[in-house]
Image 1 (cartoon, one colour):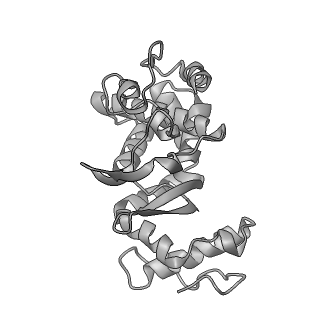
Image 2: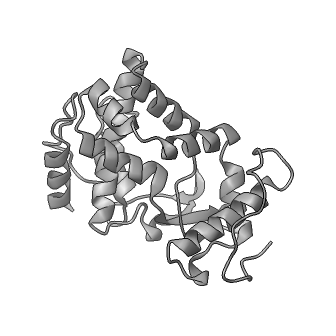
Amino acid sequence: MSNSDWPPQPPEGAKPNLNDRGAAEWRYQCYQYQQYQAGKQQGDILPFEIWKKWYEEAEPAAIRQYEEIIAMTDDVSQIAKNLGIAEEQIRKVKEHIFINEHELKIPDYQAKTVISVRCNFTPDTQIADLWVKAKNGTLQPRESLKFKRLIAHEYIEQGLMQQGLPYRSPTAWGDDPISGFGNWPTPEHYGAHDLAPNPDRPNPFSHWDKIIGKSPEGLTLRDDLSNLDELLQSIRERI
């Protein structure tokens, strides 16, 4: 399959299940048509092989969950109500994770190169599970903390990207003698993902000193996330 036929037409027939024969091709045709309807030009469309790589890396369950979350209309308000987080912050995070396309680098680890593409983030089952539980009010205490840390990370990340900072620094890709090819941020080369609070660390900014060589002194994330905008501004002033 190619994107040589322009303008693209909508796919025919009912949407197939993820594991059905031709499921990837049907979804790619749908992707092409949606991008065309959104005003994208032919050169903006991912080639099928690159799009399929993204499609195959995502777990089928996560793809289904993301499609369901995108279609939800009451999740933002319900999550805000259940967790006491500002609705506007939840809305921005939903758009950032599930809906918006981003300028990303897709690595080819064998060739040790990266391809520049504009696409969505790869669906993640853990994120989708937490989102649905947050909407339904069924998060366990540890899950609630993890979800709030996720919201903080994604909110700061999207704010920095809106300012023009890339998701990951394009010049930080390279070979590490121990870990191999990857994106290794430095004090000179880092992205929004690297500066955002780390959701997996007890101190969400403890990685700043070691990874990006910046002092996190004064950066504190409140448990209720009530200082996200102030935190975002403080980070902006340091870069």
